[in-house]
Length: 454
Ligand code: G3P
Ligand code: CA
Image (cartoon, rainbow, N blue to C red):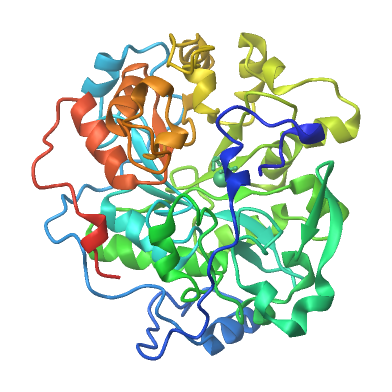
């Protein structure tokens, strides 16, 4: 369950993660292929390097390409001020490739949400690599810190739902209950583990009941450090001939500030170390909180940043400060203008762009895209998923919740509403939807993820 909605509030379309059941961790399956790709070889602190280099089961990613023939298009960076304010979708498409940082390859960004989490356990190098090979423009790591202050990729600090930590008796004593953004949460938390200890764990599928196929990979992949993702993205950018962007999210900033493990300077340090703290870098830094995004600017962040929004609740930093503003206040024209002072984009729940009605069917677009563009902000909604359980009623196919529905049609509808990018668990679906929406070629560019070799 997502924790940025205060007091346990959860927005429609964002609660399904809470359905997660324990995956069938199959630790120890790896018997060969100690693949070492993706390991950090430069630009990293020695301690962290040592820990990562010592890691075994380095088969998270493979060298063999899965997409021979993918079209290579250099990343086109541009000032975020050129946000195509008020542009109609057709206009937006025709201004692609150079008008704005978001305008490339047909007009919108495809962001690999937690990698290619529709096909691999989320936030693993295998997931990020597959997303890039499927054509994603950006891969999205969520960031939390370890006890020794290393940024690692997990959706939240609690790791019982996405790793086999429960199978490690030596860590049994670390199970605890904390108040995470106002929600009582029981499990194991990254801030109680060093990077070396986390490297003993293996990832498992969060949504095992929805994505049973992904449990095939349970027990194979490590928890990656953020630096490993940056190394991976650099290597894949070279190999694929196009810049793979990175879209990191600072998770629970207030919680980690109170835990004496603030994320902000650590993130800046890593971006600086990798030469990515630039206005034209292929980087968006995102947060559901507001204060830390502004603080990052003060600390020296020069990349683009993204104010994440939710259909309900309020940013936890504001709640903590006694500020009564909610996400609903942030999406007013005045609220959006305020965001534009420190961010270049918003990341709303997709239902804030086009809501569903009481019958569960997709309704009419709100004014959010127009209002955001008027404020100079790009709009990158989350999260587009192909399974029926994540789709509006009228875009579902059949009644089986885990079957794929009309996800392409759903995304095309949103793209035609003028969004500038989308977070998706299935990057290939996002690419195809973008091609359809913009009248681009759909031939031979769509990979078959299940035949991908990683
Ligand atoms: O970050 C945007 C998108 O990822 C939604 O948030 O992390 O709860 O999935 P998250
Ligand atoms: Ca995220």
